[in-house]
Length: 295
Length: 258
Image (cartoon, rainbow over all chains, first blue to last red; front, side, top):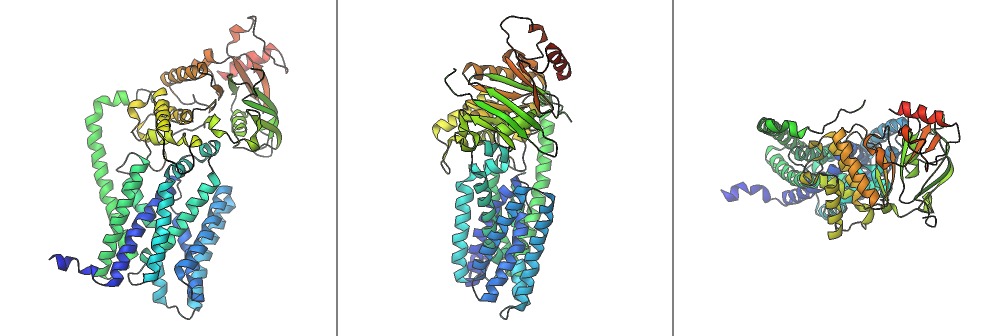
């Protein structure tokens, strides 16, 4: 029975895919928590679009696509951050141009390169179990380690910047540098996740575990820790599911994540209702010094 | 006191946020240990002035000195505690009171360092000062508006600043919290903290404020005793300077400040 249930561990490509899934499951929500905090949940999506162009360059040049993708995605992320900082209306359109330019340029370049096929393109868009090569795994491990070291090691600083950028500026924190750290970490995470989840669904793995975790936790660190746990859980379960069901792993992971989100939302809703009913006598005390905000 | 540099020394500040200048040649000095209120109607430029003084808004002309050092070279930001004008302290991802207040301690931390024992004590003290010790582990979103304002003040206090700059700390806060904040500020003032605060009306802070700077249309309309305390005017020992026009202005300001 035990041997049967662990059958998915036998093929070496699955061992690599599962290892990659664990790394992705941790690093994507680790950076995603900050993106959600700063209300830029879709940033990973944009970077993913740009990363595809990097992949295409790698395929065209015969270089490791993960490597070229990380460079192009990081440049794209810095451009996105610069546009965000300016905060102008034309910046919004510039972002759209960057994203669509990235994905269209990527698809065209892949189409033009001799070594590529449509199957190859699909693997990068939605993830694939068999594409995590041994040399990819080493690079993925190094990059994921970097992302985790930065997002966890600098968590108090990154939290401060994402929570209130102006306050962080007046506190003398290196706000611009920290913003670039977030942008580049997001770009690196996209390339780490690209093999397993695919560039189109990377952003979901950054956001969905965080959205689920924040319904259960009261604090930022607790949300971060729970999101990491859920991320690993979803990623590993999704990879195993896609092995048996022969579906794209990225899509499987995200469908599982969304299902988890729905279940937790329903349970959290019930929990809140029960708590409120129990707490009713104290309501007066809770709102004792509440205010009417000036409009 | 005359020998130490002023906490704030701003000269001839001009700031244009749009086509029309928001601040028109404002000069303001705040001595160390002084408590100054910035008053004025909506759009008079008081919020822009404090945001310029702490470096969030660039000035087109004029110069700013903090503790005798030009703003552009000022590095001792831990000496400044800033309480921005916010309607809420709630963010997209939950954060506990302690987490938000701890972020105010980073001005005194080296990048990447863990919170030291001294940091934790300072954070605990700041939470205690604003009367939220019992709720330190709670989600900020679970607090009332007044309590959230207190969290933002505690965040500024966590860095143990010498100068506290508060942008409308009383806006949208109920009377109980206003009185609690007045008590907190009084204790800080007694401890030597310099305070510059933006307010619509002084309310319970009245007794604390010895000097008010009233802005109108981006210029200083009054600098001296708080205009709201109109009754104190004739008292000896009150030297207030209001170059633009005499007493009538003060009475006028007093009326529209209410």
